[in-house]
Image (cartoon, rainbow, N blue to C red):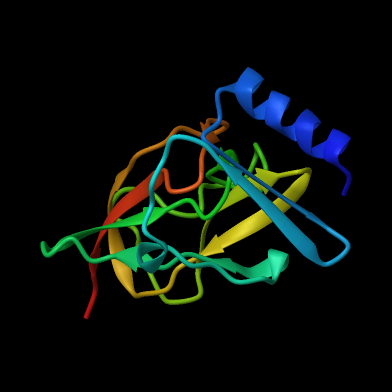
Length: 142
């Protein structure tokens, strides 16, 4: 990746008012951030684009957040004519798909790291999300 490409991505970030941008090319990943601070201990995700997983932040209460591991578009279902992966009140198990984040024309399934019950969906279908954007509130199902 050359400097002109990086500048192009920086301009795109500014134009779209994004606080973070990540691009992978040839097995290497480059990440740009501006004006945000998300502790890395709160968020991790896999290198495998087909099985993105989100770690959750323990807020000390019974309600936890699931955050976006990347910049992209949030989709609640696999297609417009399909049912949403989860709804308020839905029970899910570790490994279940919760949503899709489209990034760089790749559809990344966001998988549950825990068993739980959805308490609130914080973003709308088709909405742009940034790295670290809270997507769902849930409570653990133990």
